[in-house]
Length: 347
Picture 1 (tube, rainbow, N blue to C red):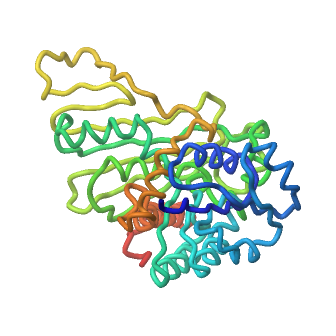
Picture 2 (cartoon, one colour; picture 1 turned 90 degrees about the horizontal axis):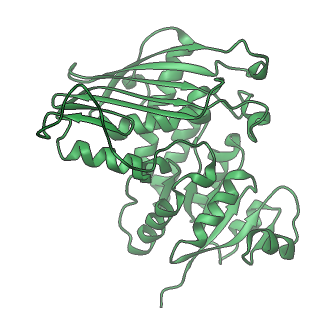
């Protein structure tokens, strides 16, 4: 019988708890170690998480543990890239929360390390594994929308003082930008739905005048217009983390044979439909910012299966996530410099 993959998890915040619960349902892997800057008692951790784990306060010590074959990084965003590089250089497979890095230079350093060592990597763009995203991709693949020429994928989630990550999310050091903080899920969703190579991006920023969001060091709302090669399609990605409204992941796709709006569709390919009314598609929507509602379990199962079989990680592999981040960094450069930015500028 093949040995279960030993997971060492770094950081004990909100995301870490969701990851641990997801790994409990994954076949072929167990969380065996937890690393935090604070010292923890093994018995207390077992009582809290329901599994026996070895606590570490020293990251290098955990990386030296032969029982740990893969590292899951859930710590502060400013630590993602340097800790991921350490894990990769120690020969560990990698699960990495978004954002992968807070600068394009650090992202390229991480890519070089991954390419050199050749470990399996899973980046937490888990929305690709959701029923909602899978349904939409299936509709596209079956041609019910025809050739897409326009898409809107937008992220609206007010991250204010009432929200766990607010205290560090407001800083440029750890929040980075509206897209890096959270809106990258929308950018990745846009890339998942809109096939084609992005040539140029233009971003505009704004910020709320509400006292609830006054501490943000960057524009917490941004809108990015995306130009694709070939000139036959365009898209828009909005990201607002300083909004006062319910969480909303907006998806609107327009093609030559029909359109999709969130979980509603009109398709000329389906006989008997009327353009006067949308037809509703029943599915579980991406409608919560609570990480406990995110589809980590199927994503982590795919990761473990890929490690064991040696087959590529599907949907959220390193190269796919790298490209989403490259578009994000180009967009944020456009916003900062007040000009369109070609993707070719970020090599």
